[in-house]
Image (cartoon, rainbow, N blue to C red; front, top):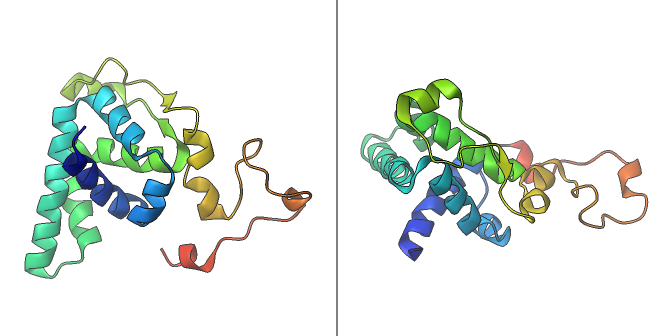
Length: 161
């Protein structure tokens, strides 16, 4: 897989998740998530999504409109690309590729593996949901004796997103 393509995927993922590239790479799941999206909807459609994201960045830079607003309008608002973009964001948080709805598949097609599936054995453990809520994944990382007796604390940096 090309390094440039993975970098493009990470650039989109940074915007989609609100996490830094360092944090996303630290999960060890970037390539697996890109591969899962390719398998589910096809590499050409993922490339189109990444192209659209780059176009959104250019529009934001040229117009001064905040990038999140341009992404919502140009990418998330697109009937073909929006559901795929949202699935990628959900995948980073949950470690699961969620099957796209039947109506979407009927309209645009999908890969043979467009099924709801945990991406790989580490995806649950590395899901962004855990650092977002300030907790460890139950049964997967030792949180420390008695730590589940206290409610999770959301780190201050995450509250402002």
